[in-house]
Amino acid sequence: MLSPLPGTYSEPLDSVIVLMARPNPNYCFQNWTGAVTIPTSPSTTVIIDQAQTVAANFASVVTSTVAKPLISPATNHDPLNVGLAASGNCGAPITFQVQVFGDEDDQTPTDSKGTVLSPDATDIAVGTLRLRAERVDSGDGRVYLIVVRGTDTSGNTGFNCSTVVVPHDSSGQVSPR
Image 1 (cartoon, one colour):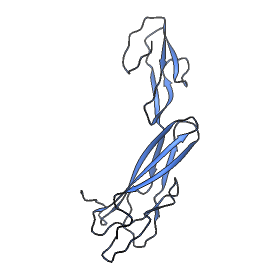
Image 2 (spheres, helix red, strand yellow; image 1 turned 90 degrees about the vertical axis):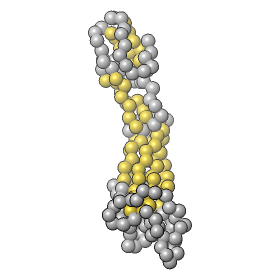
Image 3 (cartoon, helix red, strand yellow; image 1 turned 60 degrees about the horizontal axis):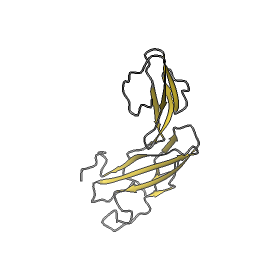
Image 4 (cartoon, rainbow, N blue to C red; image 1 turned 60 degrees about the vertical axis):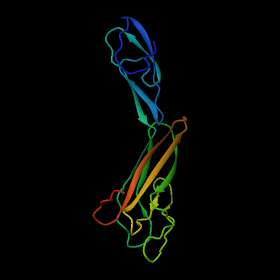
């Protein structure tokens, strides 16, 4: 019997049940906990010789973080390394792609003098991502969305998102729009 949904099932004593773990998008199968015949295979069996509890364990394909989720408005115009880190969680070597989006156009003047500082993001990769710690003076602060996508050599794909905020002032608060 294939049990497509989590839950409690009653099976005859001394039967053999086939289980198949199917991860949702952005996740990969890790292992089974419980008395299964092959704990590391997504397809396995359970011998019902007594009451059994079995669970399939999954992991997000990609995990990412930033060391500096809040950066103070800069006094100089140099982009700052925000400490973007990422890992693959499915056991196979993974390749990352990084995209950065901002809620302010980098061609918009940041002050009343018409100063345009561009680009907002440089060295766009895990470990090297640098963001400009500036925002439009008349705005409420800048928010960067960082999307890290990964594909491993086993074909697992996923993504994870992080944000970095440049607040309007040193209070660290971003006003609602």
